[in-house]
Length: 321
Image: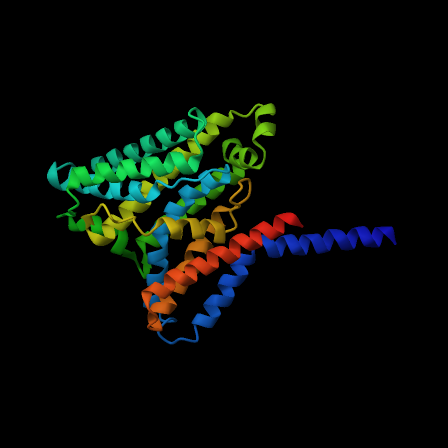
């Protein structure tokens, strides 16, 4: 009898864990099926467009994922996107640098922003929210000083292929998202450093006692956030074919929502890279179907806000059980 109870508890717990861990996948499948009743939604062109629109934001969210995984938060990504966009366009158009060199420069700048954020949090003992919010405002000022608030156009047509090009019917943007997600999955699941992010986020003190370099892992999380943000920002710049300081102004909320939707715990220690991809697709499908139904854009903000509140509440209550 005791054996039976033990096994029942084990299997029921497993089913509950499965449902909790993959809730967003089940919800996404249900949402997708419902949306397919709309004839405009289920066209190949529209579905490919949804995938394309979600791709670069998903890559940016993968960067934020690492910061949240260690129990911190990076609020500077919106200004980092603007920084990458405007400086990449400036290097390419104003200074005539090759695209690959401009790409390398802005990635290194973004990594440097991550180092600064990480050092302020680790060595300056500043709350990550305050530290990165301060950097966000500083970067915004630098962006406007450099550009006078004006977009920089004239990027080569070849650069536009990053966002608009296709391999068959599959956009390059989607391929890039899948490749980045796969690399990060392998990194987090099959390397010691990758697994260290979960350990630090789960229990910082225990991680120190076990010999992990907690400070290095924390700074690395912010650097990875900066680098992945720069890749996503370059994709968004490719789509508009111009550098713009306001490119990331409305993306911070979406990125945070994607991370939480994807199952990343705001207190750290729990999350999956694949969850970020599903969360990005979930949010983009909602935006797309609302546009197709002619619903006002402002209602999208309301719906996204409701989604974030509900998911955070579910996450909060699940920890009490």
